Image (cartoon, rainbow over all chains, first blue to last red):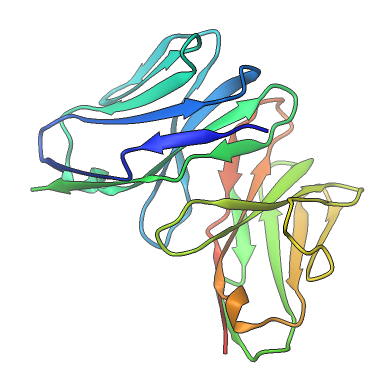
Length: 112
Length: 116
């Protein structure tokens, strides 16, 4: 089955700095890679996703890059704000199965 | 949008009792729903995949007789924790996948279960 590794487990940055979270996956058949943000005690919310036919996708301060050859994808948050503080999960989904495999999560702390 | 609700949002029960958690897709039909449990500061652990009109598929290590799943309609899946014990205390989250052929998961708000 799919195995998703996520690093780092915790990330502390100053407001205004950039934050990068990296994930690797094992199943070359995976073709959908969403990123979720989960605030304490709340549901995970989809913030951005990318499919295997695209190398990069950007939405305002958030961007995701995908390297299919190396089987890794990354989340980039620029100009971080305190409200970006949360746990971020990456996931990989194989085509046809629709069952996502989640990374272990990254706790992002943005200091004002 | 794609809204998923869960009920109850939290429940406290005595050891040995059963607890039913409902997951509903409010504005779309969900052929597939997923049930996760999440311990503090940990990732989402998939428990089972619930398919409308058929038996759920359980992940390895998840007892199907303890965690009963019923997906009776395209908008409702239920998870029943039978004979709950303190070690079952956790945050249970469902997610639904829409019929648009996309893999996007829409999560419910979660149910916090505390077994005394």
